[in-house]
Length: 133
Image (tube, rainbow, N blue to C red; front, side, top):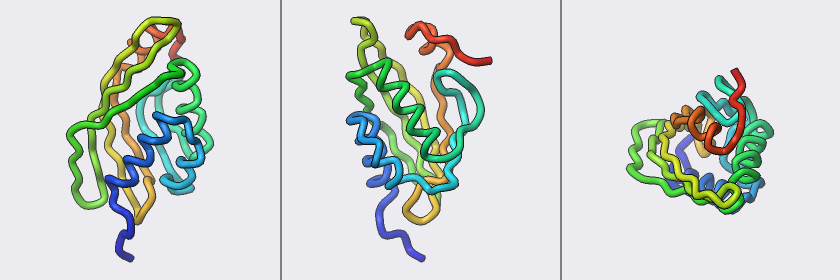
């Protein structure tokens, strides 16, 4: 079956979720068997499913209510799309900025896997959060 929506459009929708907090977008862009690999605030490893991903977005947005992410350097090949991102926001009056990268794998019009890379330990320290071991 040919894809009906471009992968870059799906990533833009995901960015809309992060920037606006519209959690319903997550159900739109992720496969039910979605897996995310990598560090995140509060842990390391994998999270599975849209409910767990919603908790990640909610936690970031609670800590950085004015969170804003931008995407740079999009590279797409076959069923994968990679990009760099820069996220800014304020936490208790302090400007926070961090960068990272994602590699997404798609099946049809849905994200099924995500590898995320950023300094979660450094960010957790700046936000006064403990990172789980």
